[in-house]
Image (cartoon, rainbow, N blue to C red):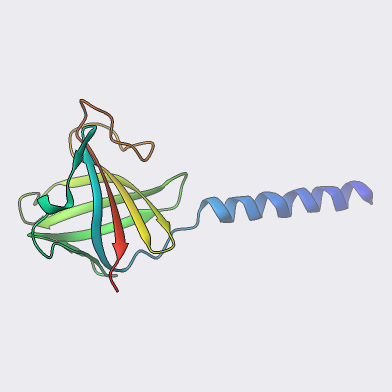
Length: 137
């Protein structure tokens, strides 16, 4: 009887842990870029076009002259696949990871041919871009 109760408790703990790691954040909204890095270098927010907010809806995204759809997967760091349909990146899929903390959205994009970023940093000599956004008021 004790063994059955122990097994049941372990199973509940494992289910709870799986549920936490597979949580996909609700990133819908309008996001203002606050800081960015590319290939290890700092990019001043002024480099973004005036009013270049990231708009995320259930249907897709818009940022400057880019638009398309996206999908999220809640494994490890949350994976973000961006499917560009309009703009300079049209017909390209960008692999990224995303993290939502309060009103701050952090996205780390692989803009080259390399693999999806594994962490939230932009190493030198890469085409990885790290952008921190703040939710628009």
